[in-house]
Length: 394
Image (cartoon, rainbow, N blue to C red; front, side, top):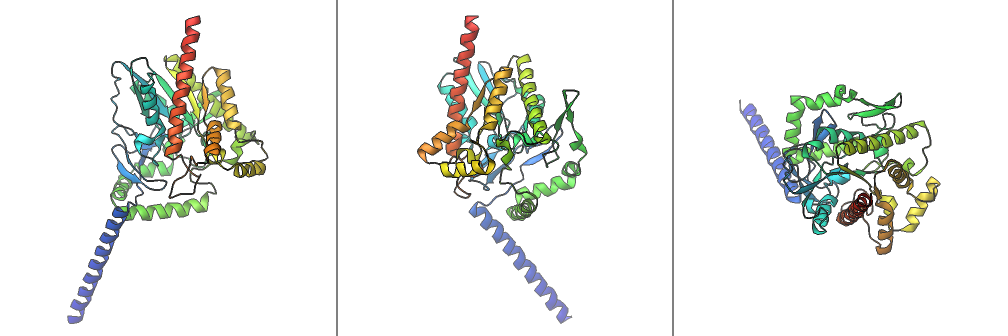
C-alpha cells in the first residue's frame, strides 16, 4: 500500500509539474508575442475565407495585430447598405491585400482611402475603401468573391490587385497544387467553373465539428499554435521549393509550354469577364499589378544576376502583358513594379521584408504599402479625370 501511495504521489507531482511548466510556457509565449493563429474557414464559393470576429497577433513576417470584421474580412465594420453621399471602392486580392504583416492603418488600401479622401476624389462625397483580400486567392476566387460577397456592398469601383508571382499559376488546374479552390477552364471557347473542391477530403474535414473544435482550441492556445506551425513548416520544406509567398520564376518569360499558355489565357479571360460584369452593372474597373521581391530589389547586380539565370532582359513581362490586355479590352492597368524598382534603387531601401525576415523578401513592409497606396490613388485620379474629359467631349 505504501509503495502504491508513493507511486501515485510521484505521478501527481509529475503531472502538476508538467501542467505548471505548460502554463509557464503559455504565459512566456504570450509575453513574447509569439502567435500563429488559424485565421481561415471553409467557404463554398471560394474554398476558404477569413474567420469572422478573429483578433490575433501575426508574427511570421513583421508584427501586427489584426482584426477580422463580422463579415469575415480584414477591415473595419462596413454596413452592406451604402451610406448616402458615399463612393465605394472594393479591393480584391490575395495576401498583399489581406496584409497581416502590417498594422491596418499602414495597409495600401487604408492609405488609398486617406489619399482619395484628401484629394477629393469623389467630388465632395465620402470615400470608403473596402478590403476583400484573402491570402492565397487567385483571379478565379476573386471573381467568385465579387459575385458572392462584393456586390452586396454596391461598389462604385472595383480594384483588382494582381500578384503576378503566383496568381497566374493559382488559376490553372494543372499548375496549382492547392486543390481546395474553384478553378475555371475553357470548354468550346467559354469559361466553365470546376467546383470539385467541395468533395475534396481536406474541405470535408474542415467542415466537421471535430475540426472546428480543434481549430478553436488552437486559436486560444499559443503552445498548440507553435506545435501546429512547426509541423506546417516541416511539411512545406518537404513539399515546396518555393519561398514564403510561393513565387514562380517562369512568370517572367513567354509561356514555355501548353500549361503556362493555358494558365495565362484563363487568367486573361477571368479578368475580361470581371470587367464585363462591372461594366454591365455601371461600376468602374481598375487593375493594379503588384511587385514581386526580386523585381524591386534595390541592388541592380542582384536583379541582373537573376535575369541572367532566366535569360531575360528585365522582369516586367507580366506587367507588359496585362497592360496590353487592358488596352485591348478597354480598362486601365497600373503597374507598380517598374516605379517601385526605380524608387528602391534610388533610395536604396527594401520595400519587401521585415526585421524578423530576410531583407527584400516576402510581402510589402510599411514603406511598400505606403508607396502603393499613394501611387494607386494618383492613378485612379488621373484615369477618372481622363474618363470625365472624354465623356464631356462627346
